Image (cartoon, rainbow, N blue to C red):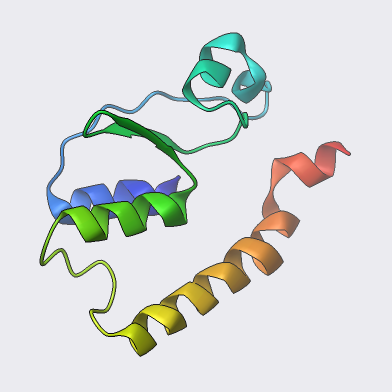
Length: 103
């Protein structure tokens, strides 16, 4: 969720944070599942939409805020960003995530 907060800050978009305590499994509460049925963070409500998954949120912000500079404008640059982001999301985050530790 830190990636989304950084992107929102870079774009000057005000937002309200709803803390979710992962250690007490608050992400599995009915209140949070109403925000994100996956029971994960982040979840962002913006422009009448509810979005989940930080990379998808950042792509949405980049595409709906012209000149945002969140992602490169060229296809090759975007592909490199996606490749690096996927490596982090798939290879690094699972090791650091609370979910796998629970199982």
